[in-house]
Structure formats: structure tokens, C-alpha cells
Length: 105
Image (cartoon, rainbow, N blue to C red; front, side, top):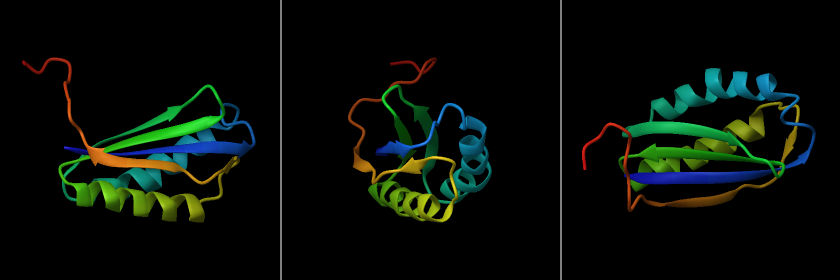
């Protein structure tokens, strides 16, 4: 399994106050494009405490994780958000340890 982790600093605006305006286009427009990438496992969007947004996307292959980063860049560039996001820090790589609740060891 491979992950793409992106951390976007919020340069201006209040993400908590505009949560629905961030969540709605992400759920309705971005997540479906990720689901089209072969080997998609999941997407997680975290609104952090220190004016940052972090996303984690999981795929079967490194190519899927890399494609998600390309699509994320297009989505952020072309979506009018109520906050200004800075350039993301991106980490892509193989998931070394993975455990889900209810899955036997």
C-alpha cells in the first residue's frame, strides 16, 4: 500500500469558520476524482490546529499515490476556496505498517 500525504499551510482566512465551504467541493468534486484512480483505498482530510490542512490518500500502487498528488494540485489551483492555501509539503511513499480496527493480526 502507498500513501500520499499533503500538508497545506493556510496563509489567510479562517478554515474553521469556512469549514462547509471547504468540505462541500472537496467531497463532491475532488473525492470522486480520486475514486477513479485504480487501487484507491481511502482519503482523509484533517483540519489541524496550527493553521494547516493535511490530507492522506491511500492506494495500492506508488503510481496511484503520485496521480492523486497531481489531481490535488489541479483541484486546489482551480477551486475558489474561502482560505488561501500555501504550497503543500508532500510525502509519498510505501506504507510500512498498516492496521485497521477489526482486522486480525
